[in-house]
Image (tube, rainbow, N blue to C red):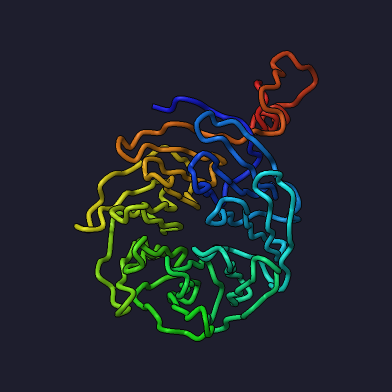
Length: 332
């Protein structure tokens, strides 16, 4: 049962991320803003403005002090998580930035773009250190290994590429999906990679050999996002089929199905203690779920332009105008 509905968003949710202590959630959406939420109460703490187009990805630095965001305005921004001030604007991509990730040691940031490049940035200086060019099409996701030594990137070319962070050279290619690969995630011990694809499967790969070890089938739509639980025992996957599935990594079986979204799920994230999953969807909501019970704990719902405005007695409106105002939140 959903316990609370919280207002704040004006459009589709593209990304969610917990800070390292699990008390704050960051989210990015099509309204070009990043919002910070207090997890226990659902209160919106701050709204960060600066991007000139949709925010496609948000993530916290390992110490929680910085938020990185990637946008369709072709930039990456670094924000002070406490004050909400923009610290740096990282420019160089020539198409939308789809994914960003901090290295676990906090020194580097990686970004993946529809310009078909992966860029490595120095967090302290904001300088671009390397540009990695091997993908043959749009890049959808980037991720660091837990030891900060290996990068994974995935894209429209159906491949997952592994990169040596120190040299920028490709280490190998994971092939097996038969459609674009939306998302990749390293297990906490770095031994496995999970990937989600438009072929409706989640695949688990052994990093050391590059071999697939399991194909997880259960979704009825493309898999937009994947994430390992902090202890590595579960993988969460969000899909075009509007569900989040929790997979038992050891046995390769679906452990729980989380249902409640009414449109595709773009992003999933585990809280640091592994007890909560956050999901962001094109239905304009962010949901917080209990991992153990599979129940929705909170829903953060889109605040539309005329939310809670009562126009029941308004005169002179056509049926079409009333319908439009209704979709914008008015009570008609």
